[in-house]
Amino acid sequence: MEYGYIFITLYRSELLYHIEQVAFITGDVLKNPAEAKEQANIQDIARSDRVDKTTLEMNRAWSELRAALSPFLEEETIYDQESTDALEVPDEYNVTFKVPEGFNAYNKEAVRTALHEYIVNSALASWFDITKKDEAQLYREKAAQELANAKRYLNMRTTPRRLSKSPPLIY
Image 1 (spheres, rainbow, N blue to C red):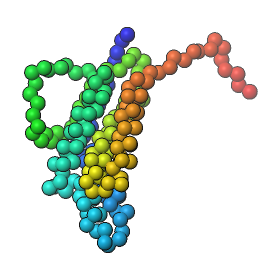
Image 2 (cartoon, rainbow, N blue to C red):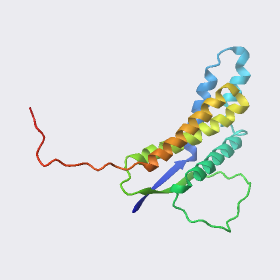
Image 3 (cartoon, helix red, strand yellow):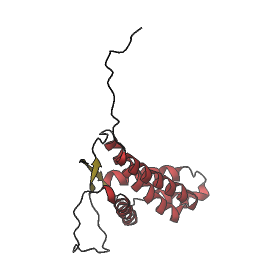
Image 4 (tube, helix red, strand yellow):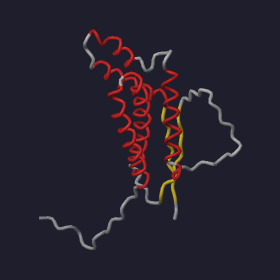
């Protein structure tokens, strides 16, 4: 069986922007002045003193994605590569997938979107575990659905079309 490759880059700034927008909208729903502190906590996901927590969750989600999608990864394993628990703040997350012959090229954007949404929803679920517990499970479920979508898209192939021997009838 022959394979092809797709390269996907997710930019941290775009992920963080999306996370921040969803958190802002979620907090904005709270209009009661008595809930002002809760609203601020929900919305401040990317504030300078809290962005490290968000980055840790984005990195965790990225690691989980790579582990879950490892059968599709086209990367050399480096066994003596050091692994630390130091906070890394990457500008981008890059991945190369090995896809089956006949992979539907239109699915590349679908895969990218699913990866993006997985990281966003996973980070939001973790943040809402702290700030708005009633929302956390919803975002965990959304993340799980996006992971399933990514796997499905990576397995999709184009279907062969049979050409008829005669032209279509036009009435």
